[in-house]
Image (cartoon, rainbow, N blue to C red; front, side, top):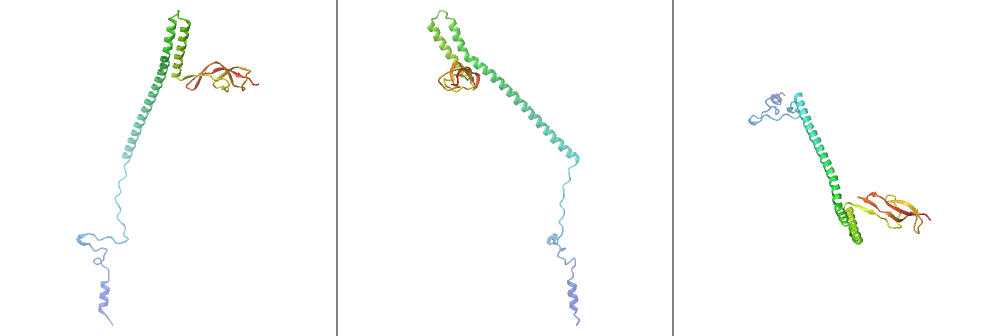
Length: 200
């Protein structure tokens, strides 16, 4: 049986621009959201720097690096110059300090010479006093004697054997010291001259 309302319902089911939700304007004139799956608009990309700008930046960086190199070079030269001056001053003052410590010894010797008629006892006492002054001056400058006691094992780094003699002690040990040696800052200034016990 023919139904006149059936065709009318199909006509209303057709999608038109007026009834399409994707194109229906939002209230207040706002644009309706894009349909799902639509591609977003591409953002604006900044323009790449020109060759002139890149060249200017490279030249500025090169100039900055050159200035830093020159400053570092000058600082190294100044440090080396100061170090050389300090070493020169240290050597100079070290010699001056050692010479100053020997001046009292010189004074004592000159005083002894100025008394030719002094008694032997007085001269001997003055010699002992001068020796004490000299020993103190050497100690202040890190100069210490090498005087091994008898029966000390022979040390070729600190001792110099003059001869080997028969002795009632172990072989290769010091029998007697003929001349003292000296160390300066733990370095051998002069080895001690010794005699050494011969093997039995």
